[in-house]
Image (cartoon, rainbow, N blue to C red):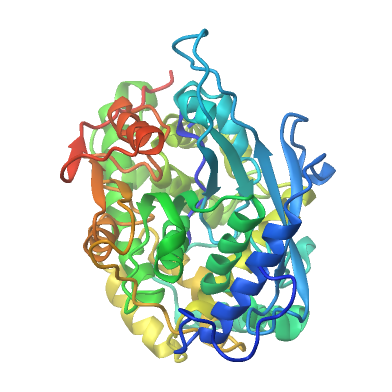
Length: 526
């Protein structure tokens, strides 16, 4: 499930190996070998700790953020085999009460964050402590981010030469021809082959179960007896797996914008649901643009705005803007607006300017990235693909993809086929697949947890939050009504932030599922 990394909405362990026999309390069923390996790695990490110092220069982080590394097994079934290093970032708790300079706030431990993806780096997370909406949490917690396995600089994964990853303008047909489908299928097969060739046998070890085990090792390395964790988007699925694998190690958990954890939906059916939800969210954006026709001049109905979008796409197909922006780049720029409504004024302005003869705003917002971004984007795509393809079975016959998505595209054309091309390498994947865990906790098995979701989130449709709520006993769901921004914690909604702070700072949850009024709609830019 392709999901952009969550950005701040306000600025929007043994020293020796265990014996072969299972230790007391260690599961002996499927995954028992990996469970023992995770225990070995966690004990080693607890003994070693993390030596924090300067962050890698490539990350361009300020000196206030300190970084270190944690060693984890590539394969948890063989903890004494090959190991890789995960880079971790931290800013210590400030102890400063933003409402009372005279009060010193006691430290509650480390808050570890995963921003999603899969394939997104969390190394920048500690910087949110500078944002007003996060200052109370930053006073009590060390803010800790990390780059998951495969994400640079944590043993970075690659599937192709970054120089060819972001190519020139591409089409984005909502009704692709058989010839175009054949071309994209061949590209997907070549990409899958590139992943296997470049990573070799290591490729099979990049999956969500190992990401959850890595999280346990990082917890131990930080010296935390129990984990306080906040996951956004894909990070919620990672957190759910951790809760299933290590329930006794959970202190507090926040799930923000929830991936549906139903094993039958990971990941193929989740992507179908995502494509359908994006059609609704694209409709929300067009309705907002139409409501500000006096500013943008794109029409006073969503239908007229759609016509303008299609006209721009046709023009770009004939003559790409700046030689870099074609229909696919236009669609990708508008897709970002479907993730985050902070983008609405900028994207509407760019579309309006282009149709009136000024392509520069669209080129600035949707054009080809420089080489450095290409390297980062290729790495992120490689990790995303490896994790999702390894996580679960996928249809191996393109006819299944074609049938399901041709039917879906009739009512949801905006994102359906783009989502197919993103995930199609999984049809040709060359590494073994995992069986998704059936995440379920009974009463008392897990401390109370907080789930947060926007009602019209397209990247992680709201149904996923309801499903996780049913599966985690003692969890409480906070809903931001009638909005669809992806990732709502720490944003402009004071009601949502009040529940987040009450839980993380005082361990308090609402008595029952509750909702918050929507955040204000974006203001148009003249």
